Length: 260
Image (cartoon, rainbow, N blue to C red; front, side, top):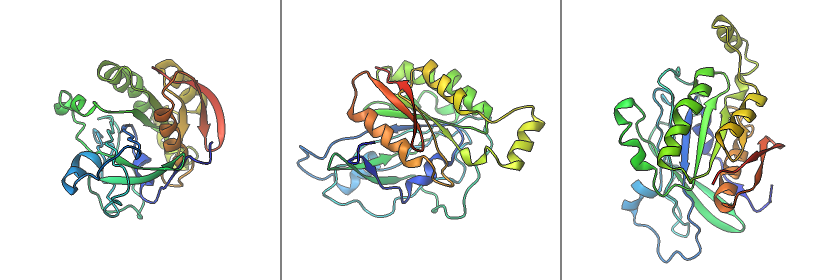
């Protein structure tokens, strides 16, 4: 990883605690910006849109403080979840739920403000949801490694929707909640349903099948691999040419391909 790629994660860590989500991320470089957005523009440029279908529950993020006027604002995001997905576990340290989150990002010595937006994911909003897709630079399609149904929905539901409405936008496949892979209660629950946690090889295989830039695993609870998720998203945004991107789990790498 280029040392110039850095993301601050004071509040971002709660985002990927959910089971099956897609995060829409838009990055706009500071260079060339002539003025800062007005405070009223925050609704468009600074927040988190989570389409959860029951996946998000109370695990929502909040903005820590008004952003610095010297930062470039970035429109961002979309999270999708599955209606069959149970509510996530919520760590006691989570901030009070709201619909906005901003993250300061430094890439190649330049500052960015990464915005994530929240929106409804119920079936009633299926026709409205694609209206949030324009101006997106990269999507993060996420599933829980201990929820096989969310893994299945990636290929059956969310990828087809993205390819229909945003066919030329790169996306990453993210496996979340890896801290639960060895959790006795979780394993017992899956065993009762004759299921097993999704393994790394399955995630890697699916990423190749759907044409994801890479496959990354993380845990919002322990924060393992979480910074890598956003580093890889930024790399995908800033290096749009078709190339082979390394799949990372923490600091480990395996090859995957960027779609165009």
